[in-house]
Length: 388
Image (cartoon, rainbow, N blue to C red; front, side):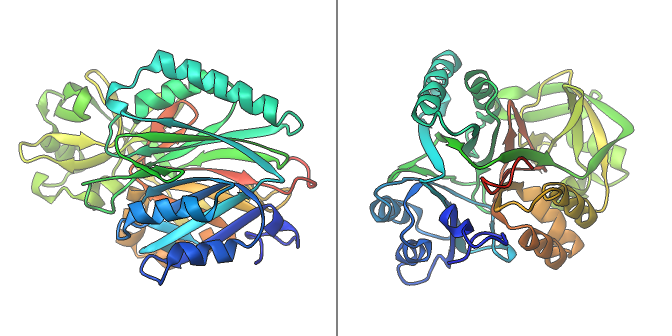
């Protein structure tokens, strides 16, 4: 088994990968065989919603008894050839180079930030004590993409993790938005999240990217239901009608492709972040993928060429040396735009060339923020190659 997108012969002893169709005979056994005999501390599974998720994740815990097994459902997978679907993509972290602690957060509806912050502080301290010889660390979050708790959760995580960089993705259900699932060590969870904290001797770089720039066209949310992520009125007008007017489009023409091509952004901490629209309700409300509130100023954004931007941004991660792997969470609306513009082959070639593995999400997390129409991830480098 070769390593992930790396010229070195020993990369496979650091990171392992496997990819199989969900309807293949005994897919978890095939993944176990592909991973080989390397002792692993953590295995991540990105699983198409077409699969029978629960028995697969129960079997995964049995097949990898010495490792934490964390999985989630997707809106598409990113495999060795780029964008794919109907697959199970897995990545394993060798125990000789990664030490992992997982933290499960159940029942997000009753989530208590203060308690969770204390638990995260203790978990991070434990990780540092158990792997004190390894200087590099990061955290990966998998969270129920229909919970609508990502903003609150990731804010608490940032407080608990301190300087540890975090990225993550909201589990998805294709384009159905019916049920998203998380798994940890054989337990399948709804309305939950799993935080994987890792310490390693491999240099790492957590990143985010999107290809949008703010324009001068702004609008104000004048009526909203923040708990449901719904905007009722923009500029004191029915939200969908006003958004369509600003775009110069008829309200009945609004669709997922429209939202992907014409996102709105908000300014947080000196940077603009996408607040993606999920759909139009029958009454003209706009439902968003992330937190929204009255008084928020939304700015219409415009895009640059997605393929050129992706090539340049991923190329920056290889300036000094190529990563062993890039683990990425990529918004469903990026895939929507790719399909709309018919650039799937070009984007997939770029992802494959840079060794990107991961999944398409209902939202992404980066440090203390829940964002949309973004790619977040971590680039992992050879331990003897220096900082990237």
